Length: 413
Image 1 (tube, helix red, strand yellow):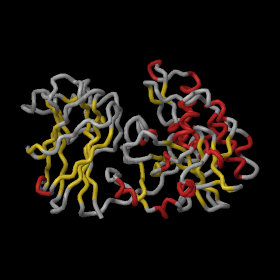
Image 2: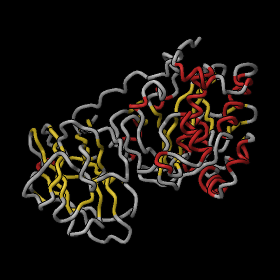
Image 3: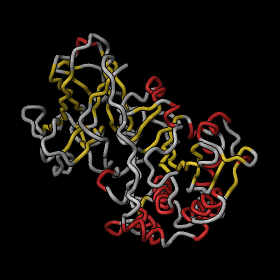
Image 4: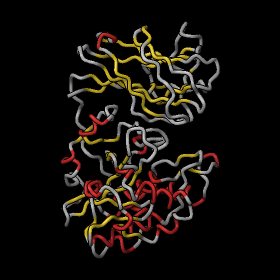
C-alpha cells in the first residue's frame, strides 16, 4: 500500500505555466507524515528544445537530485526517489530553479484557480515570495504540479461514477440531431451508427493553438468551422471524438464512458476513445470514433482487455465505418493507424475518465487534456499500473473492477 499527497487536479494549460530562471524560482509546500521509507516525488515539467542545463530541486533547503532534459518541448513527468531523511514531519518545501537568467530552459506545470495556494513564486532569487501574480504572465494564482507518494497509507477509492443527467435540456437538443438508427434495431447497429455519425462531424486536428472544451456542441461547431476561441484554429483531436461519442450515447440512452490509453506514462502514443456497455455480451466494448473502428473476433466485438491480449495485428480484425475515409484526408491518421494502432502500441495502459456529465458540470472537465503527459486526477488507472510508473495518480481500480457493469446508469435494466 502507499498514499499520494497532492494539492491540485492536474488541470494544466501548457501555455500558462511557470518559466524558471536563476531569479524566477518556484516553491511548493506539502504536509507529509514521517514514514521511514524512501519517498517518490513526481514533477510535471518541460525542458525547452536544445536545453542542456539541469533543473535544480531543493527539499527543505537542501539541494538534491538535478533533473536533466530528456523530452524537449513537452510537459512530462519526472520521478525522483529520495531517502526518507530528506523530509520533515508536517510542512515540507520543494524549491525549483535553473542557472539561466532568461526564460528559455525549464517550465514547471501550474494549475490556476486557487484561492490560497500552497505554492509561491520568487522573482528575486528567493529573497521574497508571493502566491499571487504567478506564471510567466504574472496574472495567475495556482498550484505547481508536484506530488509525493509515501510507502505507508492508502489512497482513497474513486468516487461513484458520475453519469450525465438524462433530463438535461442540452442532452435533449443533441438527441434531436442523432441518426434515427441510433434508437432502434440491433444494439451493435445502433452503436455503429453513433460512431459513424460522430466521426463524420469534423476533421481531426491536433496541431493548432486553440483547445476545444469538452462540450459536444462546441467541439462540432469549432471543428466544422475550423475556428474557435479568439478566432484561432482549434485542437479537435481523439479526445474530442471520444467525448462527443460518450455524450451522444448519453442522449441515446446507451451506457458509455471515456477511455484513456497510453503506451507508457510519458509516451507520445496515447489515445482517447469510448467504451460502450453491451448488455448481451456483459462487457465494455472498445469503440473508436476518431477512425470509426470496432475491433472484432469473428462476429464478436472486443473489449480493451481482449484487444490488449491480441498483441497487435489489429487492422485485419477491424470493421470500419464510413467516417474513416473523411479522417484519412489528414495524412497523420493513416500513418498513426499503421504504426501505432495496428501494433497495439497505444493500448499499453488503460484508464477511464470518472465522469460523463460534460454538459451538466463543465467545470469538472480538464482544460487541455492530451497536450501534456497525462496528469489529471479525474483519470482512474488500473491498480496494477502503480508498479509500472503511474504512481502520480490518486485513484485506482483493479482490472476486475474496470470490467464491472455500469452501476448507477439511469434507466439501466
